[in-house]
Length: 365
Image (cartoon, rainbow, N blue to C red; front, side):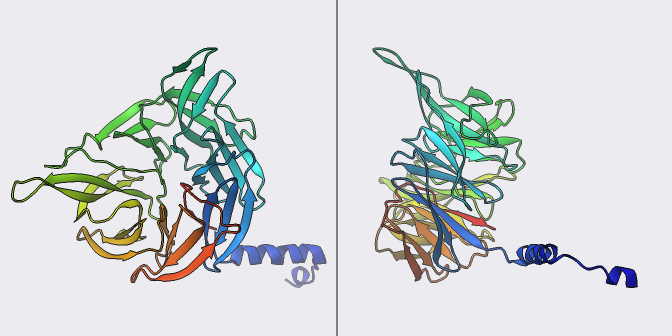
């Protein structure tokens, strides 16, 4: 033991070990990721109420839309360039580490919001709408899924493609990594490797008793921190007196682990809600547009609603459930108390850029 005790470490080695130990001991914290026109990507320290980083996305071409973080929270994959490119930005350095330009000289390809990264972080699954460009005409081609290797660098090309239904707007990878879900008129599930369709369940073609054909706008793919995706759904039911119909708002939830799909009405439609998110214990959901709403998912009832000073498109909740965040539409991110829905803080993005449809995501690192 004396011999071991007498060993001396070089100063640089000792400092490196101390630094490594400090890094390992540093508590993890929530960061908010949002984007804004023309090419901005922001990393916000939620607890400090500060913008940690502001990055420029190459070739964004005045569009920053769907944002999908890698499973380790280190890379943000962002739909840019008039929905024709996906750029992967390292959130620590701002460097572009991945690029998939979907279009080619002979084919224009759009991604209408729907893509996701697999749970192992190795692949992107992208919904594509291709059009063949002729000399005097455009020819609409069949929609498809394209799968990209996230390690492919700045000139990524699909490693495989397979047919897809039309009208898909949200793609969500299942947590076991073996399959993925695609929202359109209905909910589809596909095998990740072969592209074989595994299932189809009703959304527009649902069997919710006495309800009309529903409508939804599920452009915001956040499922953190629960691993359950949720979105408002609108329909109508016959009035109790048999005269006319009553509009209803339901909460749709899809568990990305079990695959369980549920619908529950929570109010006669009184306010428009664009996006929703579940609290960590799944006992509540929060929805946003011109009002911020809190929904009790145990009783399936609206618990509280407050008016906002302007519209927000995207809502998120902290990993511990102690804060609610709203963003999108304009140039600020606002922090709310989850119980009172009172405003705690408001962060203006530098230069007041338009977030528009950019996703608000929470990563914990």
